[in-house]
Amino acid sequence: MNETQKRILALKAEKGALILAHYYQTMDIQEIADIVGDSFELAKQAKAAGQQIIVLCGVKFMAESAKILNPGKTVLLPVLDAGCPMADMITPDDVLRLRKEHPDAAVVCYINSSAAVKAVSDICCTSSSAVRVVRSLPQKKIVFIPDKNLGAYVASQVPEKEFVFYNGFCPVHNGVTLRDVLAAKEAHPGAKVLVHPECRPEVLSHADYIGSTKGILEYAAASGADEFVIGTEKGVAERLGSLAPDKRYYVMTDRFTCSDMKKTRLSDVLRCLETGTYEIQMTPEEISAAYQSLDRMIRVP
Image 1 (tube, one colour):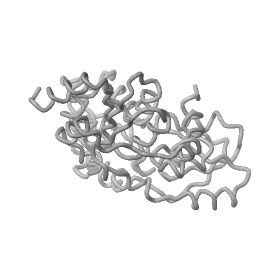
Image 2 (cartoon, helix red, strand yellow):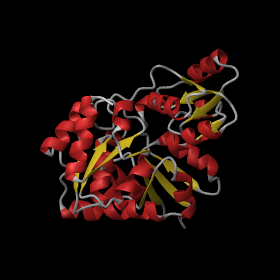
Image 3 (tube, one colour):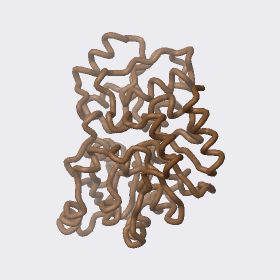
Image 4 (spheres, helix red, strand yellow):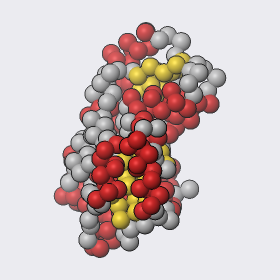
């Protein structure tokens, strides 16, 4: 552990803060976090937190979600411009238009979205909970926003429902092609292929396992296989190298890097704890409007 990490841990203890980090963060950030998880796990932990200060090492929509679920607490995002291109692809007006076009549908909103979009949706979901969330709804028609790839995967798992998709996507996952997965399988013929459902359907069709970040981690750690092609952000392969170092992990393509998730540095976390920057500010009205869709997601068994 380096000196910056030690200073962060000391300040965290002094201020009674909780540090949450996404799996896509660099390993030195994950090492100083109280909890490392995917977006679903971080959303649940944020709500259950006893601490009054939450430092969210991730991107803005995650910090907004933590604030919505904890309106009386201080939520800090170490890097203010750590955003999500997918979240920027859809606006509340887009959702309202879809509602008018499909009045009998439930609007299911992937958590990778702004608070304003969550506020005009019926329920949120994450990649780990999306299938359960859709199955829990009484409506037979689902408007799934904004990720068309995750939506298509959910539709394949819930064929009894009708789906309408918005043309949004994660640029990192959507940018991976059939050629990439076939090349990885050829280079590592004995490896299991584990893929995130934000990838294109033709990439998913060659997977041995399709699942959330947490699901991929748990599958690889528990599997009797010892070689894996990891079809999601390279931070997951790095995490697996730490959790189960006796196995081998190959990132499907070197383009599997989320630049926004990699913006956070230890120096940013230290400054965040020292100065209180950057605090997520939302009005009570904004929080109230977005709360229901997130809370409904967390309540789905």
